[in-house]
Amino acid sequence: MLNSKKVALVTASTRGIGLAIVKKLAEDGMTVYMAVRRMDAAQLIADELNAKGADVRTVFFDAYDEDCYKTMIGKSEKQSGRLDVLVNNFGTSDPHEDLTIEDTEYETFRRIVDVNLESVFRASQDAIPLLEKNDGGSIINIASIGGAVPDISQIAYGTSKAAIVYMTKMIAVQLARKNIRCNCILPGMIATDAVQANLSGNFKEVFMKNTPISRMGKPEEIAAAVSYFASEGAAYVTGQSLEVAGGFGLATPVFGDLAGAANKR
Image 1 (cartoon, rainbow, N blue to C red):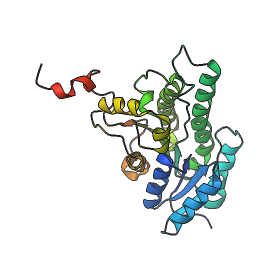
Image 2: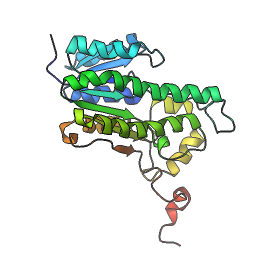
Image 3: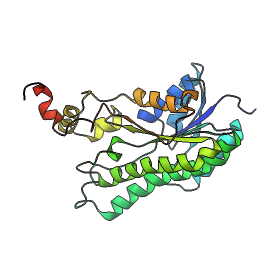
Image 4: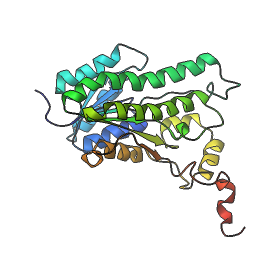
């Protein structure tokens, strides 16, 4: 039976930001497809959420597999007959190989930039006919504050995320007459398992020192921003980039060193 509820699809969503987005959109009353590689893990999560009244489903997604983009969107069409919200959450990097322009191998740079951009381009392109069939919808891209504020390393990741910010604007302009909106969220340092595992304590401490709201963000705070862009309250909002980063990059470059010296110049 075709779905009468709004339908969302979230890529890379078995943990961290992606999982928080799935939970929030399900809480908002949507049918949510978890588009993932780890199907067993996703099904366990879906079963747990569905036992509490949600409508969460799973579909295979591998960002490196060109064929899976169409089949991913196709499952939503076959099962639900519609798609209202696409959240392009997938993104990858390797802080041990994605370094400065001097120290990063070109193959590493190409691989990271290619898959990060491909995941947004292909998923969005394949979703357009289904979004248009339902008289429009919302594409929400998850970029990074690193796409707005140049970093001391991770040249590939930062470049790809900056490109996603610009691609968001291009998609927004090109699809506006089809009533398809496209917006972008730029998370700062978010307390996910990946951040905890891949970044040193010293790096995190320095980052927090230079973040006006001096703590890590929560995945749920990114999910709340996605919920807004997906809502009717944002029906007149497109092409926008929302930084959910605690003010990182907003203050004076010496904020971390001078924060305790206000009014003592």
